[in-house]
Picture 1 (spheres, rainbow, N blue to C red):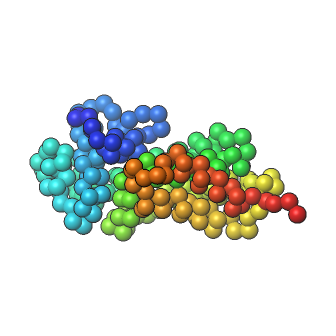
Picture 2: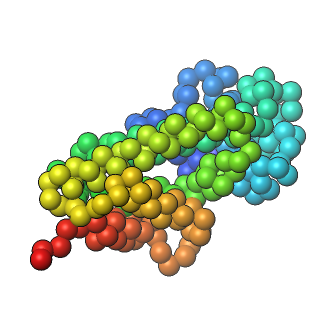
Picture 3: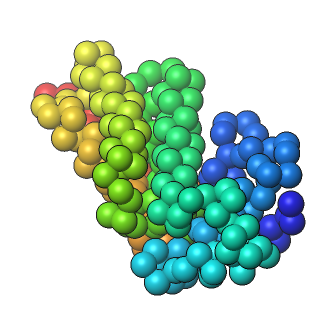
Length: 219
């Protein structure tokens, strides 16, 4: 596999990786599949899903169109794999943040802050999986929606725990979880590298804003 040299390609690889490793390391076939996914992410981000052809993706991956079809039946399947893996990676990061936190307040700060940072660091993939969703077929949409519901559930569980402990004052747990996640996801829409706000500063700001929104105030 040709190692990506651009920061965007490296970010896509990191976003697609399971926690603690690179995606699909090992066989030549697996490495070629990853190279195709990185090429597809570049093409979808630059041209949009509808305007991207299999030939575009193949050219970026250094393959023929037939070489792409060996690994992926269609560009819709490629979009699905990018979306599925991106959501899995994000879900695993949130689960780990909640698991490692000392209390619900720390967990919420880490989850929303980390999710916001992820959408800044991986804004290219974030835009694809969030805003090209309508191009997935019904079966693939449902699988991605299942992952989104799992992500919603992680945040809702933290909010419910905070309400139970007296740390949070939240009437609509599910609705609040959706609102907090939506603000983090929106980072992918407006973020671009080189601007004044860094992923680290976004993580601190969004994490603190989330806690302020739900924190129970004395009196």
